[in-house]
Amino acid sequence: MKILFIGESWTIHMIHAKGFDSFTSTKYEEGATYLLDCLRKGGVDVDYMPAHEVQVRFPRDLSQLEKYDAIVISDIGSNTFLLQNATFYDLESFPNALSLIREFVANGGGLLMIGGYLSFSGIEGKANYNNTELAEVLPVVIKDQDDRVEKPQGVRPHNTGVKHQIIENIDEWPSFLGYNQFQEKPDAEVLVNVDDDPFLVVGQYKKGKTACFASDCSPHWGPQGFLDWEHYQELWVNIMKYIGNDR
Image (tube, rainbow, N blue to C red; front, side, top):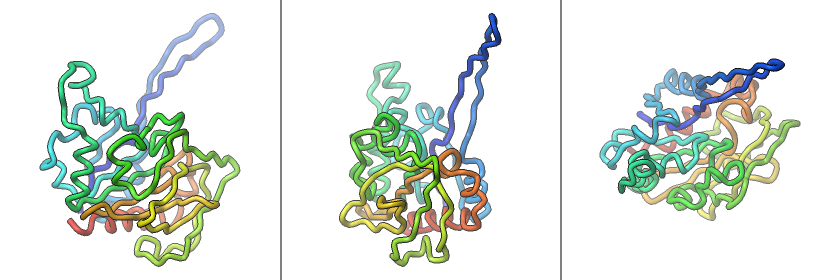
């Protein structure tokens, strides 16, 4: 199967102050490298689109998306999809990328949103997916405010007892340092909870399958213990196979 993985990249600008003098530096980072390697080793063909490329590379029509079995959105806010360069800088009408994703799923494609500071509602509500087309598509109700739950002491998810192919071999979960808080829709299935909140939810949108994972796929909410977890690769490969198997 073939997926399009979007997001999990950022640029950091730093000011180094040393007494009277200071200078600046900039570095670029990608957070999903280990996950993408695990998926590829698990037989999943991955095209990766970092966050800064969406405004110039995201497909302009549905036919370009239909070569994929599923789309993954991770830690990238809705503005990046909605404010394409042609619209924001050149004032041109441009296809709505989130509408294209909704149509892709309606026609049988899979969609996974992974948590983070710019997923779901996100920090200060800036991800803002609750006011977009994807609020209709995803199997959860997204809050209309900052939805982060910070757990610096660590918190362990637990299975709900629902039997499902994604978690059939998973009994114990590692600790996480936080997650996005949402509620499942009435027709969705909660496979995993964290405290009293949904953690892993699956659902259906017309012909397509959807899933939401409430925490990070990598640091910082997903600490090193999560990446070292024996079921890490299995979990993500299982999710991809589930949401993408109808294509």
